[in-house]
View 1 (cartoon, protein in one colour):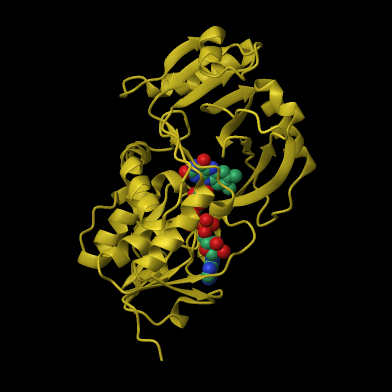
View 2: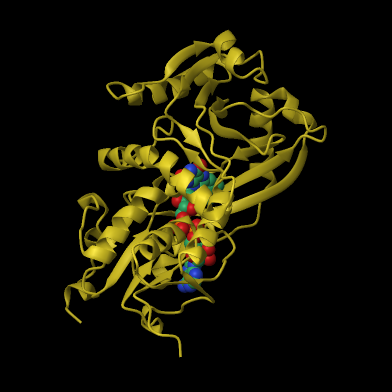
Length: 363
Ligand SMILES: Cc1cc2nc3c(=O)[nH]c(=O)nc-3n(C[C@H](O)[C@H](O)[C@H](O)COP(=O)(O)OP(=O)(O)OC[C@H]3O[C@@H](n4cnc5c(N)ncnc54)[C@H](O)[C@@H]3O)c2cc1C
């Protein structure tokens, strides 16, 4: 019989794998219980690391956390690339914000307004300034800005690298879906099951569907130099180059439960926006359409820390639209908490806020 590990992590997305790796590095014996369910968010996310241009942080605590996480990324990526021997496709070359038409200016301007008073505000650019940085942009682009602080990474490579680095650090992987917390024998248990976390504990985590399209240049031409966050006829779209001649186009946002079938309407909308911003994409091949489920919460903040009323049980879920960005900091704080009891997780993210009457009764 395998000895009981110090920690069992349930869920092998970027969040669970990051925590598992960090805990193993601190000398804990770690198991990851994982079944790849359709809609796994980490298998779909393009990997924007954008605390600046993603003007959708619902609370100052999350914005501050996102900035700290972004600043951990370069060292985290370098260490992970070294530990796994993987090129993570890390792009530290900034992000362009682009309004397609004058009517899209207001929405792009919201990204600026949001940043007033913060460090590294976006630099405003007219159409010529944008094209000087990104020659593939449409000459019709109205204008926008450039954010040096926002980076991007290939999230699927990050996930594969985390598995490799975890195994090298001693993490054991157990295949299969965990039906209930009590099924797992371990010193401590961490729930990192994304949108499926409520199957294991009654947190109000719900799936928010997002679709992405992957394009490939049949002629292997030069790809995008920068990530682009655009607004086309009021619709937000994100473009990032991959491996030189591929482009990821992301992402829609719908509340349709666990339905992970790609829709023609979403694909059409993404492609129309992408071609409007970068006309050369019209002759690229559609390689793949993917759907992922972002784990959301009622206040759109993650659920991280000790689970009230359940000894030695921890949560790292509800990372919604920013789980890739937040993974390095989430992992460090959870590893501190599990390994040493040091709790530096922002109080706003505590599972306490969703404590049920049942949890108030000690077990
Ligand atoms: C379209 C889209 C675009 C996105 N873009 C970005 C972006 O650019 N930047 C960014 O930072 N974030 C982005 N996100 C958000 C990010 O992907 C998520 O926040 C993050 O991946 C969540 O990771 P996770 O490990 O918590 O969950 P997941 O990646 O969903 O992983 C959870 C895993 O646990 C497994 N599991 C569940 N229950 C069990 C069980 N009982 N037993 C065993 N295994 C189980 C599931 O199968 C799944 O594989 C995007 C998401 C989507 C969908």
